[in-house]
Structure formats: C-alpha cells, structure tokens
Image (cartoon, rainbow, N blue to C red; front, top):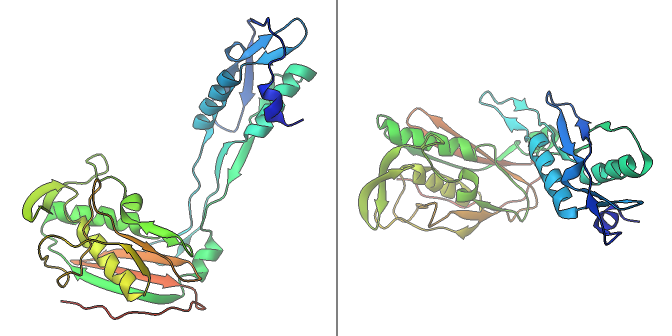
Length: 292
C-alpha cells in the first residue's frame, strides 16, 4: 500500500498521546536532528496512529534544516567554467518508510536522514556547448563617477550574468534580479518617475534592462513585455530603452529558438557589455539595432 495512504489512516477512535524518548536521526551535517515522537505519534491498544498534520510539520522543519540549493555551472570572469554543484533535500518517501519501519518493526532509533539529490539545470557539459556562438550583443556607456548608480548597475549586471534560458522559456528581468533593496547592496540614485527626475533605491538598473533588451533584439528573440521611459535617456536611442520597476514595468522575453541561450554581462570601465551565446548548431534570425 502507498506510504502516503498508510500515513493518512486513522486506525482507532480512542487514541491517546504517549510520552516517549527522542527518535534521533543523524545525517552528514555537524548537528544531530532530533524528532520528538510525541509531536505526532498516538498509540492505540495495539497499533500507533500518526497525526499526519504534525508529522508533515516535522518533515517541513527537517527539510528546512538540511536543504542545500543546487548551483548551476557558470563561466567565471576569466572565461573558465566553474562546475555545477548538486543540492539536497529531505527524501520524504524514504523518511516515511523509515518511520514506519521504526514503529512497526522495532528498527534502530538512530538512522541516517535520507536525502534526495537535486540536480542543477545547467551542468558543465551543457554550458560549454552553448557558449560557442555569439548571436546578440549590445554595449552602452555610463558615468562611472556616480558611485551609487554604478554600484546598482554592477549588482543588476551580476544578477543576470550566466543566466540560461531554455527553448520556449521566458526570462523576466524583475524575477531574475529580484527586489532592489538596501540589504542587497542597492543604493539611492537618480530615477525617472512620472516624467520627472527623482531618487530611489536601485536607480540606474534600467540601463541594464535597456542594454539587455537591445542585445536580445539583436539576437532576434521574441520580446514579450517592454516599456519605454516617459522621457529620453542618454545611453540608448529614443524608444530603445526598457524601463523596469519592482512594483511596475518588467522586461520579459522568450527563447523562441531550439537551443538554450546564455547571457554574459559585464562592466568594462564605464561601459556595460551584454552578449548572448548559444550552440554552434543554432538557427537564428538576427536583427539590426541602432546605437546613439
């Protein structure tokens, strides 16, 4: 019978909570995870009954403690590939089977916590295959003496760098860069709000989204969402910008090609360079894009 179904069975009407020792689970982490049986185990005259809601909470807590996010392979600043790293999370089905074996078969109360491997989306082999052919490019310049704005540009550039967009997948600038906050290092810098210059946290990142838009357009990719500022800006021709705001406009495009796309973004002095790469075998239709 399915372990999840077993877990949900309420076997007796008159169950009482029993005190018990800790059920200890040891994993590869330095700390020992301990689960209190009395948190979720009820016992009838002959068989234990598990409180599924409490048991799920226990698994959630364990999962939070052991979870390690996978890391995609990336191309570093020297052009070398940094290999991927697998992640881990609690293997819930195996954990449930362990618990039932402990209760019903009187197995050891100390067992290794079962972990499930989480594989990254991008491994070294894939990354190496899609950095072969440049399919799009755009470069803009900025005032590097404006330290606050330059910092914001640097953070947003780093956030989109090494992004891989698979066929038919959409790229959202806001989703990838995330909310621009002081905690992340973003600073107060000039922005355009309702046609007027003002200052806000993250000012300047629209140069990153605008440079990306032109590189994406140069590669012939499908633009899903793009808005211009309410007034002209100094780093791209009129109407060639892509304004973004966490609670407002976003820049979104789709990979309408049959091969994954790699974004490489970096700052070179007072210039921002964004290039798009893919496999040698990609069939694409580039577009000409204007410069100032």
